[in-house]
Amino acid sequence: MRNRDKQKQRKYWRDWYYRNRSSKFESQRRRRLLLRKFVDDLKKESKCVRCGENHPACLEFHHKTGFKKLANVGDIGNLGWGIKKLKEELKKCEVLCSNCHKKEHYRV
Image: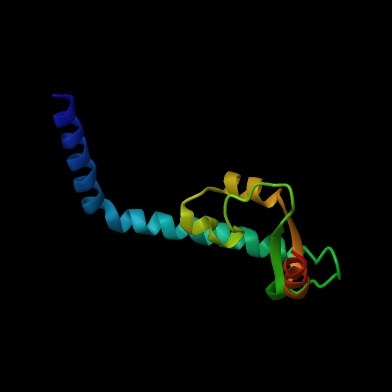
């Protein structure tokens, strides 16, 4: 009986998803855009901690040594994470320009 209930539940949610997928896609798109804007605004306010480069297109987030990296900052929106998790992941990072970031990983 219990197994049957799970099957009914799966069917219900599958049917619900197909009925509501356009609104679901739209809410996911809005969330991804919100997270991307948050990261872009953060880059506009930041500069490389090593050389001082401040052009947002050149800046990247480098996970500091000793912190467990859960995801790349740029991938968080696509993973379905929220702004709270994004902020937690950003606390583990420092802002580096592309060149300094490459130099950092070349040393490793």
